[in-house]
Length: 319
Image (cartoon, rainbow, N blue to C red; front, side, top):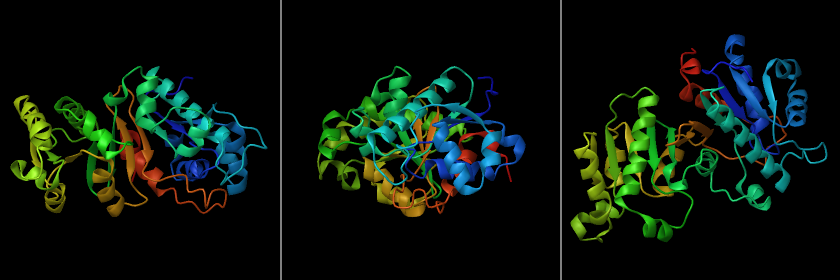
């Protein structure tokens, strides 16, 4: 592969979902010179069949394509959850991440995966951050998810686990790592000195211990340590207070829903989900595979278009 390093790797996600469709539609919105900076990773048969269905076969032949996660003609079944499709999504994303590690591209965008399909394939997987960590040889709790949408940037300290499990493994060090990953991601996205708001664990950030001691044991020392390092981190404070004020560049959510709900409320189909903390920057769209409309040609690519603009200066400069 000899694509320029400022290019983007785009993996197709679950081939039976809307990923291949929105990939083609999004690329079709780009000027020809910019399209040349995109390298698509996925099953060639799916790419060709989807392009035919959308009337974009000529465009598909113009895009730099790398075969990954192959599926047969019989296994390509839009709308069907299958282990083969799940394994394909992981394989295409892995190949794209490796291309970024090798310096062939500057970042990765992954179309939606289906977690049930991946589990059916027998692959241990808890989201793209965990895959980035695995491919990059890092521990899972060194790579974090940051949602961007609706004017918000929210990094998550914990993700796909029960609240009790998350509480049991929560430490000031883990909160600091997530916050620092979020700060570095903001810097990479053009926010030089982000103002950071630390959400509390309990209501009102525990109200000084009235509602529990979890914040005093975790978020309070984490904020103090980050402030001592010179970062502009405030809190902890109730997430509702911070989100109502909307005066920060980055918000730190302790749990999955604490961060997902506000972004999904404000940008239900237009959010971007960044895996941050590793050398490889990966983003996926903030929505799923939409199996109910897969293969029908009606999927909206705008979430992917916005993700392209977010993750790379090359695409961000487009009108």
